[in-house]
Length: 111
Image (cartoon, rainbow, N blue to C red):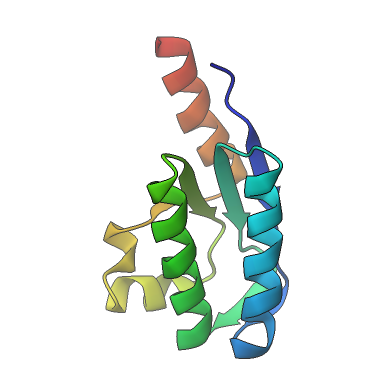
């Protein structure tokens, strides 16, 4: 089975004003057949509770479809939010895209 990895890279602040647009973009990736969605947060400066809630809702939906949602390139504020809410134990977090690719290539090659 070929893994269809799609990357989404939101920018600015992920809050209630951008949450719906972000959710819809992820839904489109799922409809296009993505098995793994990588959310690259390198251009996100801040995530509030609405943004985090959107990520959690999407994670539950994606896992329910037996697909994966991964996150990479979090800044210090976002990383602290994930740690304080224990979401760092829930989400598959990677330091950057290269770390994600290394992890997924080694899994693919090992099979």
